[in-house]
Image (cartoon, rainbow, N blue to C red):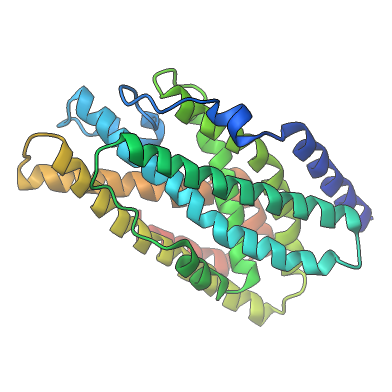
Amino acid sequence: MDYIADRDRYAKCIEISKRARWDIDRDVIRGRSFDLDRKFLPDGISKVDRLDLLSHEEKKLLSRIQGRTYANMFGFVERFIVSKILEITRDHWLGEQVALEALVRFCDEELKHQDLFRRIEAMMAERMPGGYRFLFDPNEVAAIVLSKSTWAVLALILEIELFTQEHYKQSIEQDDELSDLYKDLFYFHFREETSHAMMDEIEWPREDAKLTAEQRDRSVGDLIDLVAAVDGILQQQSASDVQHFLSLCGRSFSKGGDEQIQKGVLGAYRWQYIFSGVEHRRFRTLLGNLTTTTQQDRIHSALATLA
């Protein structure tokens, strides 16, 4: 019965994929460019509204820098997502072909998203001030992520897919002050991520069922290592983004002011890429089903050091 139920869930993902299908030029870009008089990210994601020392225009500038990094982060995490999903399709090659089709569609859409975000970065680079740097090579990061257990990587992928949806529904969709192109970019991205999270919720428990208790415990350690690696990326990128902002905003802040901005941006990035995912109801529920109380305590203790 579980096998039949999963087949039906994969079939539902195919149905959503067909209905949500879009084209980069025809649907997303449509000959437009980014409006640099508007914000990119809403305050609910950028958290710039908490930085009272900044003017309205400075908050918009910081929002656009964060928004550029936000797009680049998706572009590079999808490198390891495609690699891992392609790998697990092997389990379905000679089995359930509905599952195989759903996962192949998943990979096809993520490859399209990579192309989209590469083009978006090029478009931003043409219009935004020079000096911005995205510090990380997607292949190098993917190699590190993929060195960990499949269980841990699937947990990380689900966390990403869930916060993608949460950010759009709770913040981006509601904000009429954003650049129209930037808002549409994440509307179309969100549409195809819906079925991806559904497949993650099938594949992670399927992988979990293969493991011994000892292997699962090691995988929990791998997940903690991956979260720490993500946080290392966020610390470095947030520092780079703040330096870029300070070089552009046209005035100097006190040392305490610089530190407040740095702390605010790092906190925003930690919420964006870690906490908004791991605190998502669907993620917490599935993690609770797959781990012991002791293992959950290990994860919570690791997260507490970042909070």
